[in-house]
Image 1 (cartoon, rainbow, N blue to C red):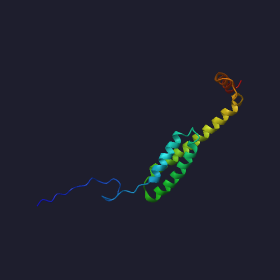
Image 2: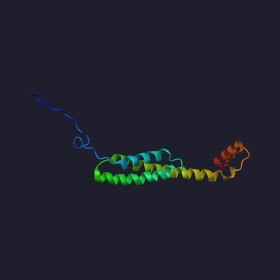
Image 3: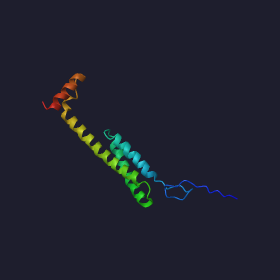
Image 4: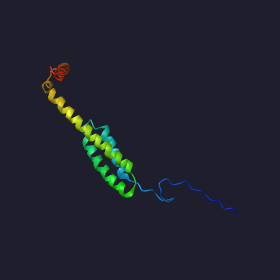
Amino acid sequence: MNAQVIETPPNHTGAAPGVMAPKNGLATASMAVGITGLLISPVFVGGPLAVIGLVLGLAALMTAGRTGVGRGRAVTAVVTSSLAIVVSGLAVVLLLWYANRTQECYRPDSLHQYAQCVRLHLDGN
């Protein structure tokens, strides 16, 4: 009798064959929210979304410390969320600066007059 040995491919997760590897869904969710927040951070929705991503990312980082899974995604979430918060803050500062510099232009008779007024105020004349 020839007994054949069937080899299973190596499991790269470190778990025993047939056992599901642990997952960190919080890390994946926080990474998605952080990246989305960064992409839309010039819009006001990006800032609050980035704060949510940062909180989720920090929670995912703590979970990754206990389970050893999802650390890279959690770090990505924290970094992208932090960048999104900074970009959102800069967008707000620039918008406030623009509104302050051009506040006299808000009652134009035409779009051409508005554009001309804005050019005058931004050039410092």
